[in-house]
Length: 540
Ligand code: BGC
Ligand code: CA
Image 1 (cartoon, rainbow, N blue to C red):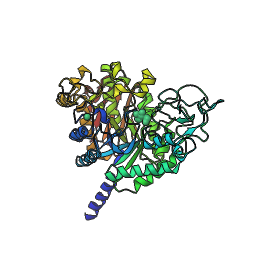
Image 2 (image 1 turned 45 degrees about the horizontal axis):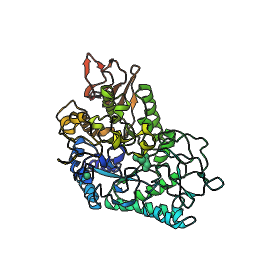
Image 3 (image 1 turned 90 degrees about the horizontal axis):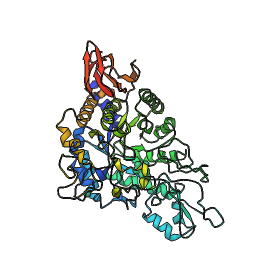
Image 4 (image 1 turned 60 degrees about the vertical axis):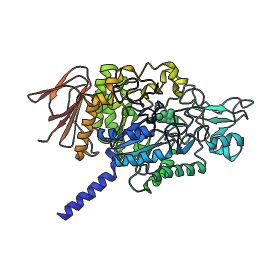
């Protein structure tokens, strides 16, 4: 008996120790989550005030987008001081209080780290500008002489991810590299000082109590030897599958290994999640080898169109490639850089129906899932933001590619003018919220058992109860074309209809949860168009 209890304890410690393997992690885009001080911009105080909501939703952890000191040329992805909080978002004391409070609510906290580039206002870059060519201060970034008779041409043909050349020339004649905006100069990861600085930054936040890091552009820190031309003039997209000399170079993995050693030297299973837009799932799996990061966002899944065969293929390939290195899959449908999936799947009612089904599909898969704030409300992309509000650096260079529409503040209550996002009395939020969003607010949806929020809450509750699922794999069941059906262990099955027509198939158990109406009669289920159902199979 005693022995058994001990064995259980050991199993439990092992299970909680590896908490990230099947965790649901909620992405908080701080600027748009909740405004605690009434200036129309979300902040750390606002996040703190909504921790109860997140705990009740049933997520395991939160990932906070950057809240560090920044001139905000790229909404915080241009960091000027990695060890302090921008006054827009609060203070370091607020960050500490938020971490502690989150822990009290049973939520782990992951923060963003931005190692590919700093802000041009970072003290290092300011020093580099002042010190001039050939100085050690310039060795922290990637400065080069230009081509052409007077060095008037950029050092190579690289284009910035946001559009336009990836090089900017200084008055002293040298050029510096920026894969993103000119306000985001790329660091030189061949310089040991850069390594030392980032290890120190990681320690700073680990000491403050964070449970892990989301590593921005983790596939970009190392560039191909000699900075060779890409060889064509097209702009390179982040969301591309092309092999380019500045992304996914083998050298980046040494950095991830060093960081993993650092994470492992701290108690409590601190994790790293890689943001890596790479050409294939096999390349992605390199980032989650046993001595590298714990997770890597599966953008191949995110970009899969609404099609049963395509989903089945990407799920199989994802499980195979991550499984081959012993890592869990890390599913994601939306984030602050892409069009919200309600809109990608068709917008309006169609998009919402599919998004609800996609939620049940995704949350039933083995591994970990990220939920982007507002997807639990079924928020669509806002496509008609007034021009004067739009300052996303990507949109400025590429009008069709703006990321503002997925960053609109969250509606908390059905009250005008800003739906409880800000304090009463303020005039406007940093991005305006659609007048129609009252019924989509948290408060409205909590009252409605059929709402998308209720669907997510129920799904997360069931997922927690089904602890036996762990991250074990799935088994496909035969099902008609355009549908997916699978089991996880003996007790749980999922069916998804990705067609626009009702489909009948044998009911694989009793209904636990459905994204839309479901009719079961005589052992046959009629699945509504674009819907998913979770099934319990206790008699199996
Ligand atoms: C972030 C973006 C950011 C870029 C540059 C990304 O992948 O998620 O929001 O613009 O890195 O830091
Ligand atoms: Ca604020």
